[in-house]
Amino acid sequence: MEHWAYPYIPSWADPYYETYTWPCCEPEQTPASYMFFLFSAKAQPLFLDMRFADCCYGITFSDLTLGFDDLGLCCGIALDLKFYFTKAGFQYVLFEIQNVPFICCGFALDFAVKFTVQGKEVSIRPKWVGVGNLCVQVYGDIDMDGASIAGIAVYGYKIRCELAPCHFVEFLTVLSPEVVDKVEEIIGDVFKNDEMEYTRFGFCGPGCCGAAYTVDATVFFKPGASLFGFSRVVVNMEVPLLANFSFTSAFTLPSIGDPEMTMGFVFRF
Image (cartoon, rainbow, N blue to C red; front, side, top):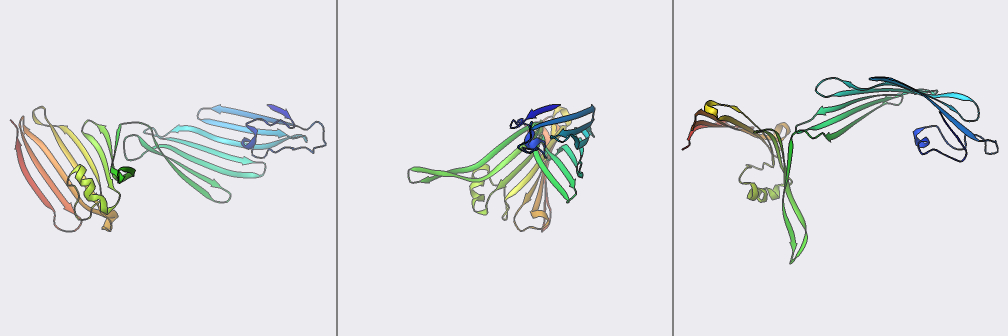
């Protein structure tokens, strides 16, 4: 229960209590006071908050909130529900889904859908909860104006998510066609035929004689290509056959043209 008199206003009252404004009584009325009553009940995950107010004219019902918090679904995903109405009637029902995995490395999304009497509101909030190792590299150069530094020119960036030893996801993006050559001067010859970005997946597993097989698949993209800008897929694989003898293969599948495949062997000594 809260009680206060004009002109005092608790720091939480406005805007927390949506309908509260001073003076709620006529200025000449004495005493000009306000009372606030909150009934709260919780039985995890359910909760109920019911509020009443007395603004000089007696206690009246203000609003009611009913729902549940952190209802576990699976894989760390939680669901919240909030149903809210006032003495004027239904106001909204809010659904929130938290910690939906996104891409890799602890990136997740929180979804919220709010249904009101006027319509529907949808919001998406990305976040990082810190699982896995994240590495970000930015490619660029110093922009010189004579002997002075005018700024920094950024050519592109790479994001690499280490999920486990030799398991990773990697994203590389060049910001404009004019600087593809400058990025390749740093990372080597990677792109072909106007390609500007790729997504690479890598993984491994136990193989012969204590060694491990490795596989990486790279999907390249370029502006104007069909199917989300896809231009080609390149898959590289190495499989140990003996302690110092491995089979290697590379497969290329372009969006236009014939696929290519090469095979070979590597002998280490």
